[in-house]
Image (tube, helix red, strand yellow):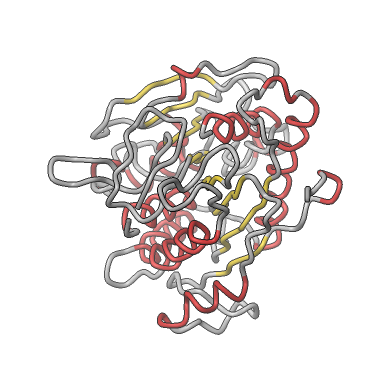
Length: 343
């Protein structure tokens, strides 16, 4: 059974409150911590037709309804690219039929320095160890999706060209939640495609992670996400594929505002700085150009989007600049390529 692009189903919505707690569909009543897994099982039913599961977490100044529309548009663009030129993505031999889950959280504030700091502090509190629930909830979500996705070859392999692949997509502060959730999530087996060896102690594997315009310090992978990557005596998080991050100097939220709030520009403006693993830097490609495998097959890939993420005439005057200017076919091309290379 397939899901044609004209009938791409609406994303499943998962809502968090300002403490990162999972809420009931009313968006207000928190689900008790010991009922999170049960609630997710009721809300989520991974469709058997899907080849790829995308989990999207939005960023600053995004209303819940807008987050859903953004996720749907991005996934639809990727599907349209595949259907228009399947030969450009030869790894998708079994097709590309995406399904999306959107994680929504209260991210609105005044477009001022005070408002930026308020949401920055909220995002940190929602994921802070011991108090924040967001990583716990998202970790449960990823584990549930992993347990439910098709595994036709038995327990030895979680995903292959006939199974279902799990991808993370974040924007702005949403990338922070995803990194926190993945590095805290408990562990299990392999996936085909990337050169990084799998760790058998991991209970689930994320096949790729793409973060647009991340709102975090350039040294966040040293200061805040110390267990995301393998170190001596530590296996690292269950991230099998690359962590890909876009940046643009036209992003005023992670440039102007981040500079004033943190005394330095953020990843979304200038790319990753210090990191515990080797990095690779490339540029965002037009949809007709193919990414070389050696370009993306790295632990951290910085993607320079200066030439495209510049904002419209209207958004250039907006306090956040081009911070949300990633809804482009070229972004969907990158997302689709990561899905293809995960096979």
